Length: 181
Image (cartoon, rainbow, N blue to C red):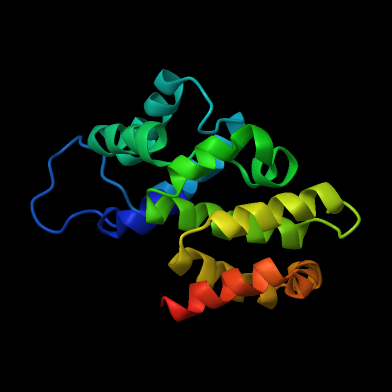
């Protein structure tokens, strides 16, 4: 939802001007209420499309519900940060596909960094550290640059990525990222 609103900031507030009676328009409050409803009902992007669309219509209107459903179905990567960290080999092809959409892969990258910093270091064992590194290495350079800054800024992620600097391949990759910018 946050990524959808980031891409469609004009949908945060109702339009100015003549509003149609009986029509539902989005507002900041309706987005919060919609989010609360999704959490309360246990709905997410893997929920039945019809149910999610109906709930969306009730809070932000029919047109936006259609836009939101298209976003969920077509644009928003169905990848979760836990997929990247815990099952990277299974989702690698989806990550490669996500790398074709800079906004999607950037949002995924931010989510992965947040997940790393939310987990305890004991939950981020060697397989998860390798998966994080492999994910980072396949990111487009501009996304990798932002991810690197975020990883270094996180208390837990910084401890993990500092190990990477001892690897010659990684150092060369980092040079390419910053020399191409």
